[in-house]
Each structure stands twice: as C-alpha cells, then as structure tokens.
Length: 190
Image (cartoon, rainbow, N blue to C red; front, side):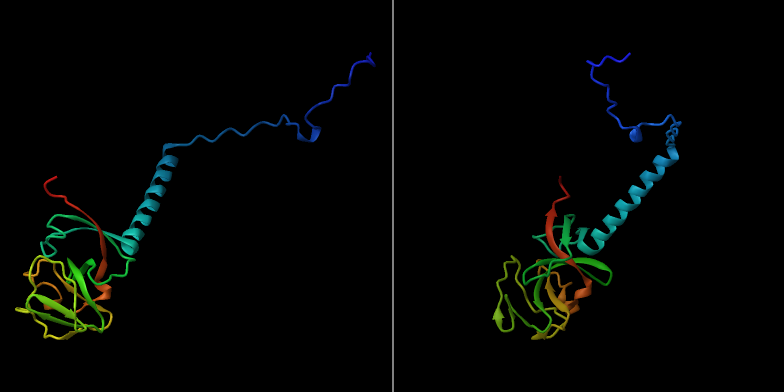
C-alpha cells in the first residue's frame, strides 16, 4: 500500500525522451583506405592553396647571378610580394627571355630617363642612387633620353657594369614582373 506521508516518486526523464530498447547501429570501422583518402584530400587542398599563394600573391626564388650585387648575392634566397606596387628604388624580380633577373626600378611608363657618366635623371630630375658602382651610358643599346613605354618599368642592376637590364632590353613590361623583393636570406656559406 501506498504511504500517504511519503512523497510520490517522479521520473526525471519524460516518457517521450526515454530511450527505446531499439538496437544501436554498430559504429562503422574506419579502414586504412578511409584515412589514406582523407590524407590525400588534405594534401591536394594544401598543394592548391600553396600554388595559388606562390602564383598570385608571393614568389620564392634563388638568385643565380650577381647583377643585383651587393643587395642580393649569387645564391641568395629571395621572397617577393606580387601584390606590391613597385616604387622608384624598389628591388624587384622579373623574367626576361625566360630568365629570372633582379633589378632596381628607376622609372615608369611615360618617364624620360637620361643616363650620364655617374648620374641618372628621370624627367630631368636627378635621382637618389645609392649603388656603390658607377652608372655609365657606355655599351647601352638604347638611346638617351629614353621614354619608357606605357605599362613598362625601367630597371637597372645594382652591379652597374652588368648591362643585362633596361639599358639593353629597354622597358620591362609589367606582365614580366614577379614582385617586389621583401626578404633575402644568404644561402651560401651557412
């Protein structure tokens, strides 16, 4: 018999939320093929992200010349930022005739460049040039004053005795630029 002095026992879980005695589905065992597929998918996504970054945002290069000496030496690791708009004096990486080169931007499309013995003018104003090597118009394949074509930049090597720059090639089209050099690291002699 029920004791009227005892409180009634209330079930804390409503009947609608009670678990049924239905059999549970067995947990599916994950096989090596499942893990290999997940790993391969992560690898593909990582490779795609790296490709996008290194194609459109940044560049990683090794310098194989001394044309940018002493700023960048042969064997230096260089990181470039493709989204940076180069300014006068910016060290850039660019491709010309399929070869990667490094140089310093001197002028842009529409500018008038003149090179005299030991100094350079852009639009009839002398530029601040901090290279240790003298600049000379001798051996140049372009005539001065040189008007830089639209959508091009005029690039000079820091090692000015090396004429493999705009003094030989003329203006470098903007499409050949591979970005402004933002980081260099000496790889040889470490």
